[in-house]
Amino acid sequence: MTLSEAAPIAQPITELLDAETVQSIADEVWPSLVGDGEAFVPVPVPPPADVVSAWVDIIGPWTGSVVLTCAPATAEALTESVLMTRPPTVVDSEDVADALGELANVLGGNIKSVLPGESRLGLPQIGSAPSRGRLDDVRSLVGQWRGNFLTITVQGAAPAPHAERNEVPL
Amino acid sequence: MRALVIDDSRAMRRIVGTILKDFGYEVREAGDGRQALDVLQEGKAEGWRPDLCCIDWNMPVMDGLQFVFAVRANPEYRQVTLMMVTTESETGQIVKALAAGAHEYLIKPFTADALRDKLALLGLLPEEVSA
Image 1 (cartoon, chains in turn blue, orange):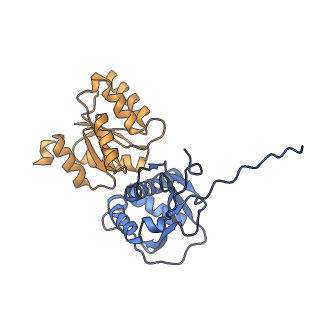
Image 2 (image 1 turned 135 degrees about the horizontal axis):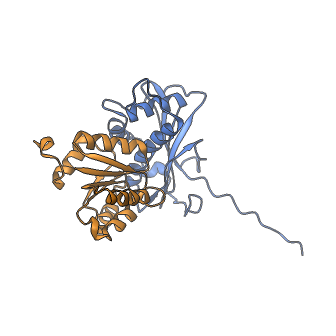
Image 3 (image 1 turned 90 degrees about the vertical axis):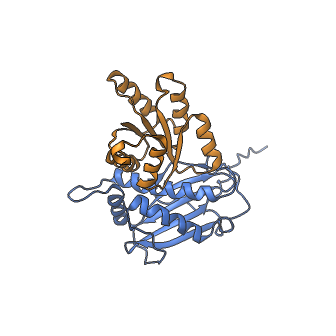
């Protein structure tokens, strides 16, 4: 079953998940994965011009994605922190995709566990964030890590495009 | 002590591997269940068998649960302890993994202390570390 094939649930994510729960999950994830003393701080800073996203899909009674978005430079810094690399070691784009993807995976897995019903978690993906579904089916935490813009967004899947009908004139 | 860390994330393999090495483990890695079976097969030729496998659940090619089934189906690996290390934290998933033959379950995110506690519980913490 793919994201677009999953039957949408009537309840939007805003009724299933509050911001405090997302923050408490981030509070667990950051110190254990990013490093001791590290935190996702829910204080917004201006968004950068260029962003990169990593996400995992949740497919179940509620279907959507957990998306982590930040500037490419922040993604690199996060990767260095996750991998505990020190100069002169440099991280490459594969490292960034892997580390950012794993952060999204751990956030997504923990968010999935607090949603009702049995759901399946997809594999991490990286790139431009997937399209959002209903406007009210989004729970977004805008904040920062080490002063850099970062968001954690839990968003419903965009509806599948309607199949085009092939009308044959009689 | 020997461990095989199975996770599609290199970052996670590195984190788990580093902790296990700090505990005195010799660590090998695999990026999915299929690769892990290959590592076991290759290890057999050189007399290397892990005491512990740390297994992620969601992986491409062969996932962690399929790997557990495959290992449990092979009597040669009866002595290998299987521990799921995963974000899958619902009770149903834990029960499924334990029923398939996993011995322990560690939910991501975790701390080095949590992993240490699990190893102590399994009797897989080297004496010099547990002392």
